[in-house]
Amino acid sequence: MNERVVVENTKVVADERAPRASLLWLVAPFVVLAAALWWLVAADPLAGFNNGAPPVENLTVERTILDQDGLRLLVRGGGSEAMHIAQVQVDAAYWQFEQTPPGPIERAGTAWISVPFPWVLGEAHNVTLVTNTGATFEHEIPVAIATPVATSGALASQALLGAFVGILPVAIGLMFYPALRGAGPWMMSFLLAMTIGLLGFLLIDTIEEALEFAAASAPLFQGSAMVILAAAAAFLILMAISRRERRPSGLALATYIALGIGLHNLGEGLAIGAAFAAGAAGLGTFLVMGFTLHNITEGIAIAAPILKTRPPLSRFAALALLAGGPAVLGIWLGSLAYAPHWSALALAIGAGAILQVIVEVSAALTRANEERLAGLLTTPVLAGAGSGVAFMYLTAMLVKI
Image 1 (tube, rainbow, N blue to C red):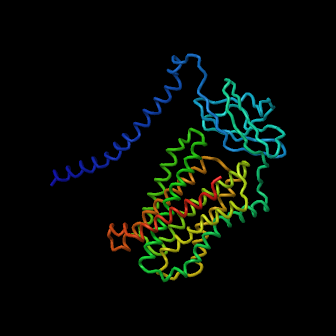
Image 2: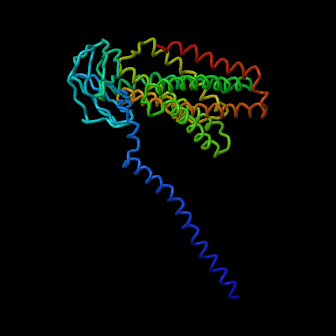
Image 3: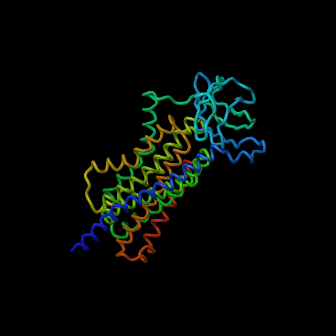
């Protein structure tokens, strides 16, 4: 009996010591890492490699503001060491400038550069930033226009434009719902496949735009990797959420389609707002009409999964706002607080959401064909997918400038 008690007590002591040992081995690597970093800073072993060459410098202009006081640039440092801006040239002439905050720009740090330059409306200007090591960084202003300010009138005008290119076409597409309710199996397969086709085009277009913005962002953000990782994360998160209720269908599937399209329209709105702020593009009547026509099919795609149900009118309004409303928010953010890495991130998340919707719609189409993959090679499916891609491609020609 006594031996049994001793064994049990020994086991209890061992069980109590185990968490302490685990905690010790968890902390030990961090202690060693901290000691190694302290030694690297204190001993400076890299000093022997210094051959007098200047440090690697990189500077990215993330935002340009033009107003009655001149021009202001938001710059981000990305070099191996802190950077000092010594001179600023505008159109090959040196100008006095003010930096906020003053002093060196640390790696990943930002600063505003203000230059009292009398810019000319509608003309192009070239800005050159010169560091104290003699390195130069060019920034072009393609068309000089006053940067929009957050007034009630400006926000209302931008909201009207966003509603016209985002919410209105989706609502028009949803208006086809009553006419399509009597669709038979052939038409249902066609519409679901058309949804896959237009979403496939949006996926390619979104990734392309995201990579373009990523290339314009500061190198420290690792633009291409950021786009791929953000898209993958969005896809996996949405897949996990959607599979909590097994395989979404009906209104749930329509909501996921609207969400994916909405995230794409957020990125599209960011691009429009940024183009307005930079003076790089002006939307004429024909171009706005092109955006509207380009997005009408999105409403039909949202309506396709709910043709066999009768949602209340409020659900249709919510779906239209979810899919088209982000265009308004995107235009606001793009014109007032634009940065290329944020646009790239938003578009990457949209790409992941669109890919998740493509997977879910494809699964719904497979179920509609009695779980047979061969059913995806039928005439209505191939015709629908081809029609979706073709319509989006042709209407995209109206909005590319």
